[in-house]
Amino acid sequence: MTVNKYNVDEKNTKFSFKNYARGLKYLKKYRWKLFALFIIDTIVMFSHLLITKQIQYILDNSVGSKNYLVVVQGISFMIILVIIHLTFDLVEKRRLLKINQSIVIDIKNDLFTHIQNLPFEYFDTRPHGKITVRLTEYASSVADLITDKLLSTIFLILNMGLTFIFMITTNFKLTFIILIGILILNFILAITSKPKRNLRLDINNKYSNFSAYRLECIRGMETIQVFNRQNENLSVMYDLTNKFNTARKKLLPIGNTGWLSVQLVEHLVTTSISFIGAMFLYPQVSVGTIVAMSEYSTNFWSPIKELFNIIDEFIESITYLERILETIDEPITILDSPNSKNINIDGNIEFKDVTFSYLPGKPVLDNMNFKIYNKEKIALVGETGCGKSTIANLICRFYDIDSGTITIDGFDLKDFKLNSLRSQITIMQQENYLFSRSIMENLKYGNDNISELEVIEACKKMNIHNWINKFPDGYNTILKNNGKNLSDGEKQILCYARTIINNPKILILDEATSKMDTKTEKMLQDLTKEMIKDKTLIVIAHRLSTIINSDKIYFLKDKKIVEVGNHKELMDKKGNYYNLYMSQMISQ
Image (cartoon, rainbow, N blue to C red; front, side, top):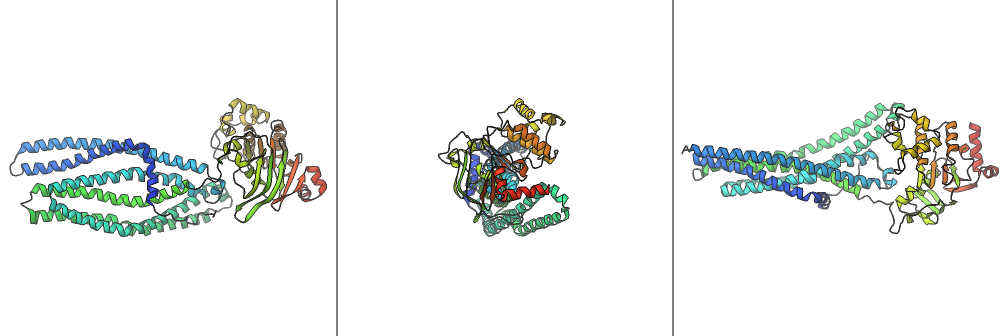
């Protein structure tokens, strides 16, 4: 998969009404509420049109004849219509807002659910800011597109239709003038839609780039300040912002054509109705009719102005929808196979002719073979980048191998349901995350069935109970983002404890104690021996002094395992392991 960076535009999507149709599926469960809104809006529009009709009636039946009873009755009826109009309009807006908010949640939930199941590879190859923006701004805009904008379009067209009917029944000749204006606007819309879309896609890409860099900077703020990179980063941010603003400026000239065209045509048509009616059709056409037609014209063009704004917003939001659907369509390559099942693990692991690569043509492991037996304590060692952590990730099936097989207790990894496999294997990675929750919630993370008393008992066995209680609120102490109120060693102690508390069948420790002091490290290893004695243990370590008591040590080099044995056997061989061990002893 091609790697995308913060300063690289994503590939443009292609427009298709099928994408919009997919978005409309979110309306299905709200169809009866939407139907009720349709009825309410019809009442709102009809009451508004009747107000104009009442004005015509008052003018035609009171001017000249001085029939004040008609005026009083007409105004009284208009007041009733205004109250009905305002009441139902308020109800409509509130209900529409609730539906819109519900659909925002539905879209975000679907998107987040899918993202959680995407393979590591997806997150390895794109800036996280470009993913985040789809969950936030894009989702909200799309919800507006398929609720507020869609319903508004329907209601506006209905409004135009009802107004048009009233106009025809009032005077057909004056109505014909409006049809000419509509033809002019359709022509303008036809020639500006495609350029607007292309410019909007460019704006989205530039905003996505900006968002990606912003999130990257926030996550790396400590490193930025350590290396005094603020000015350089500000320069990059200015450049990305300027590119975004430049893209927006390019849209402005053509973006304003719709709004400007509607304004010009509206004034031209409304003025023509009044002029032609007064100069050529009066007195065959009454004053009330001319006034009513002018008012109907204003009513008719008001939704057209809104429709042109909606069209511009549609062009923008449909590009957001395409990005969201692009993410939802991203294949979940690591998933349960049709015949997978829940299998209890004993802990026998075997790699048979395993080849794996992150990038095509660049294998990290090449034809690798080894066995790990149930309850065996083994260590993976080798130089940086030799594939130790990759082996751990493959056992958990975070990636699928290129060729060969990986089995646990004789079952291929694909025979296991993912939930079954990963619930019985726990890996403490080099970089672990502590959530902005209490220490207790972090320790229980991944094992919701364990009680707080059981967690406390486990911590007592690891001799960290008193240490935890020294925090302001003990186990209820809320950790800052990724444990920022802890030292690196303290964070690793909690992560180590969480891993042990999870009680897996296979335990993988990837540099699990590298940031602890030697005394704490030895204490935890000694105290947890009893807790992990019945587990298959895989330890990945650079400090070889921590793994000398392993049952077996595998030395990785050149994408393969080149040496196998316990500490004494490998030292006697005086090969790769011996050289690495001695170099560490000399450097201490």
